[in-house]
Image 1 (cartoon, rainbow, N blue to C red):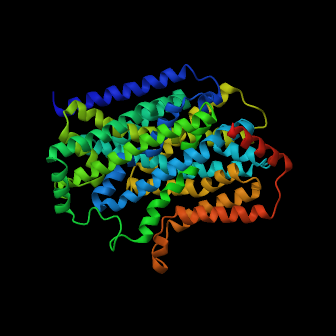
Image 2 (spheres, rainbow, N blue to C red):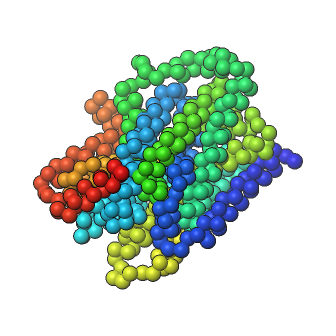
Image 3 (cartoon, rainbow, N blue to C red):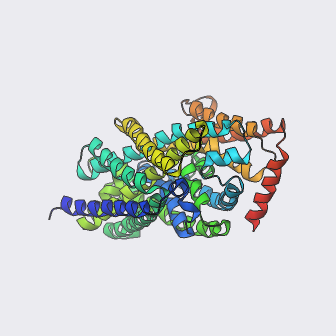
Length: 494
């Protein structure tokens, strides 16, 4: 059999496995709580790997190794910021959010939690946050589809649009059918595939090159400044921007919704240990992949024209075609795990947070599940149209969406969980401020001292915090809101 045949067999096995999980989850999904949150019954292992897999997306195996391959270890500051941010998210957000969402009217989405937490009778928070999710997740889902198309183009020579359509179709199929339970369990499988591949490629790559010292010599020859983390070639602004990625974790709806679905606040802490361990292995594997890539390809564009394909080409070089096929499937796992989570959260924003607020009568459980499935399909079609002719790199698309969520939701979620005096108007104005700052700042460049080159999440995050605090100081929360806050905090402590 040819190499392509072996790789195609691995892909087919992977695709069939994902569809089977979706069909299994379908038999266990009866109402909107099951479809959106799996009945809050996830064990910490599934929740942790699901959060990690849905977080990292195609950029972990394509975008990050590509950036590290092209620019050197300076790009590793992003990985440092993300690891610290993920740890803080599990420690600060997970236990309290798991408890507070039940106390606040059994909220099953981030917008409904904000609405219930602050007793917003006008539902302005719900509408604003739902619209922010629709806007930024459309970019995010689109970035995943771009990654899918790029993957098939690089690894099989397939037409970009055909590959993108194939990835989108399989992902939509199991997400639409199985809902949150399918997404979580496919994420578990995908997370294990991702971390296994990211460990295997650099380990075997080092052996292929001739050992650690040979790798170091080859990298030094290709790029003497490759290992520079600080120094004249590394700006303070660049390091701060990279570390600021960690702030985004507090506001990513597709990640923190896992905290809401875990079985208990105590198990959220166990999930954190599992999740951070997975992340450390994955990030170190991505760095190792880039380093081995430099040693093997020496920045020769004839051997590797697209830096974001370094993981793909190394996998094909180092392993038997069938094994390489499953490693290539790991890239699809990273891409599809994130797309599915984002589709589901966007669907929940459309149905649970927007559609239900305009309905004059309470729709049936079956009606809501059907509407959610239709919305998954609709969002996927819009994102696919945006990805049809990509104009940005995967990392650029992800960076914009990550900043949008981090700056608009991150400070608001933290204040909801830790500050009793937050008001609905403070949260609303702060959230809008964060989103607008990201949109404006992200389209500027240069400025005094290059200030507009700072990653837009930082000014957006700070702007949200300051505005939410200032506006909240001008008002007073209802006594019932403060009493509910005390109850949630006491419950989280155990």
